[in-house]
Image (tube, rainbow, N blue to C red; front, side, top):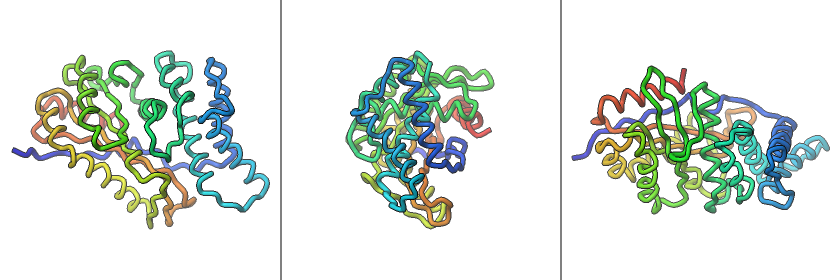
Length: 292
């Protein structure tokens, strides 16, 4: 029997509309480099991350010099450096996040290329905690699962297993691992999948307005859920987790926005309508905590 499902968009977890200048971008990246060095994790100039960080500085230098060369690849990579730097700075000094940050400094972090990377796996964990803490949600790094949240209203500690998807063929195995990671929480948990690497490599989403761009990303989330719905449904109905969290980000050229170049993210939580009442209560509490 096919259960009816529920998909809830997490509007609170989207980045607030914000415009950053090239100077601000370069400053955040440099601050991240200095902070990592201060904690014994130097970003080597010839490393993958060092190269990416240089792109942010180059973008600002070209702007200061009055260059009119619109290098979209440079802009994308500079924004990737910014994205990494923001996530790392949120966790800097947190001993439980040290391994995740070390993986970021040692891995190929070209986010628009479609290659598996332990650093990109770790960035998903760092970015998720950054987003949650930014919304005032008590979140911390915990191994296992990956992230731990304190739900409001005395609903307990919640486990989040983070899985970055590089191939649809790997999802069943990743789900199994994720369920094992949240097993100690006795069903008080969720498996989160990041789908960025399912978007076409080095691509720009072109849309007339923000709504159209968001709809395109939301469709990627929904198609992923539908493709693996049976496995997800079985896990929820067996009480092994409350639901599935899906997240996807992409660079976009949105004609109605200023500036037109943006990084957009869509998050959603999926569960089965027939899930236990307590599961629904916990997910509602999580949604409320994020969106308040």
